[in-house]
Length: 476
Image 1 (cartoon, one colour):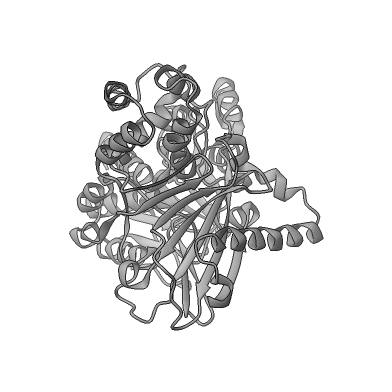
Image 2: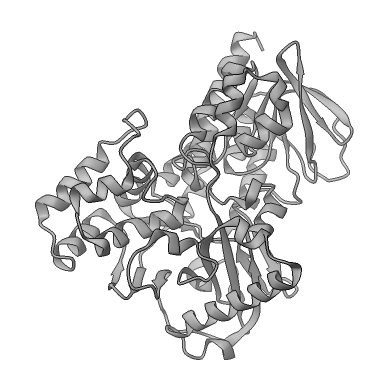
């Protein structure tokens, strides 16, 4: 079994998977469980991709790197493709709050309660609300993608900026959707959440990924960390393996869990593709990136219960562009209470992670001095925002750290530090990769719909099935 950093790759494989995000790991687990020889390559020193964590202060503090929430469907996905133990550790976040100048709402993020709030708090008719949810529930991948989110909301809630803020803001944070994206990228994701609310993994991302690693090894998946793939190798136009660590490892198929543009234009090279496919790839728009501020409390320090997920903004109205401003006016606080979130570690401290969406170039174009100053200002603004809920928070904190799009880019290799992959047009290029080069597949955050934990895991399962069909056709 290959896992330790010093272990050497000594054989060829049925499948090589580049990148260990949730899509790559899920595909690896399925294929390994079904008896295929699988090698999972990860450039970082830990598995998980953007579903990851880090420690501070001699492991006294542990932080999930970003806001992690997913629909109830993740339970079924984990039970089917991972293990019952993992699935049984997924729990609902029952206290989601919205605090801004237009409204203050506390909800469990279910369709039933959202309907109640839209009718009783926002004064909408029950027929309008039911019609909106019915319309979303009937959306699917094959719908006409020309209808935008802006047009969708104008159809049901004309002139109601406050309603749009209530419905749209959490999904913007969840997958980067804007008002100008296709409505199906909002409708499908929102409907998934609305089935039974927002869920997370009880125990923290570090525990989840450790359990997934154990499952991968149990299913005979070879894992090589700190192994950055240099090239996807082709032979006579067919996938033949990868170049990694100065050598070629042969494989019948390759699944890239990297960015689709980086995969096509970098790891393979545009000279191997038809001009039309290259043009489609080049025209794919990357999604936005994100910033985080991490706050860990002193030993024994406590805070009043303020909710588990708090969407807060000081901006007077809902302006999606403001969610991406360098000068942040909107942020989401994820609060990790030890007994609820990390029950396996009674000594764990309270952790608070503030997440904001942003533009990569706003940070990339700063001088080193301005970059550091802007990070400090982001931390200060975050503390001021948190003081509205916890006035003495500064006195309780022991650790404060921050991440920017450049941090995301460094550790995940996502181009421009994108947190949500690509816009909708990326899905078509991704799903047709194996039709362009036999044996080459892609699974990752594409098309917004396939972003986030549930979308990524399910896309990994879809591509694992496609790989098995290809291998069966080869008689493998």
